[in-house]
Image 1 (cartoon, protein in one colour):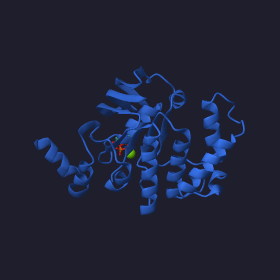
Image 2 (image 1 turned 180 degrees about the vertical axis):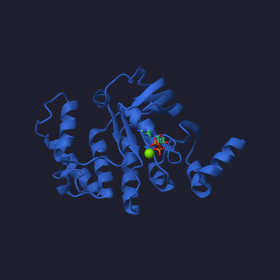
Image 3 (image 1 turned 90 degrees about the horizontal axis):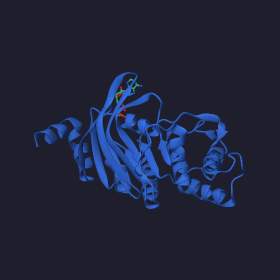
Length: 252
Ligand SMILES: Nc1ncnc2c1ncn2[C@@H]1O[C@H](COP(=O)(O)OP(=O)(O)O)[C@@H](O)[C@H]1O
Ligand SMILES: [Mg+2]
């Protein structure tokens, strides 16, 4: 069992306060969905958890199984099993997708990163490629090099499914996906939780959550958590919009 706890987190970027006291937690097997209008701090929260150097924790704590991780480098957080799938990942044309995945798995296993993949790794990777609707040729292409939006999302999810992180964070994994893509990615996210990851996922849409079945839905605004509830809140926000939803919450 793993548990990620965000405790009263206040974060500055380039001297500008972005998060104003965010608290939430997620455990193995759970998916917590995070919603919130553009600019509410969702991506900032994920980049802070991942350890991005520009995001300075001015107050609060991030704990993995009770241990603070805020002084760890990003690579050390990956080693601890915290992985982030970015909304718009940067292409790394000079590294093959399969090479990256094998290197990550080798590193965690304490092997040399350039060691050849085990037959099990290859079998699993090929199986997942097909399930995710990618082609074997994607594995031998540069990471995200010339990938379509949908292919990039699938490639990010492939890395998470192969790595089986303790904490998986996915930032708008459904943005720009067609209906089939949403189903594939949504099911894959549910699978991550079933396989024991603690999952955080941001989205604006109810559709993907239909497949994901989140344990909780958190709504952020202005760098704060303003609402925590179940899936029904997603449909409510979709139909009335954030502004009206916040008016309703505040009136209570
Ligand atoms: N590097 C940065 N420099 C200045 N402001 C930033 C930076 N990164 C994020 N912000 C600001 O922080 C706020 C939250 O952004 P973000 O976390 O990307 O929101 P969301 O992902 O919810 O849309 C926005 O107002 C954004 O402009
Ligand atoms: Mg964002």
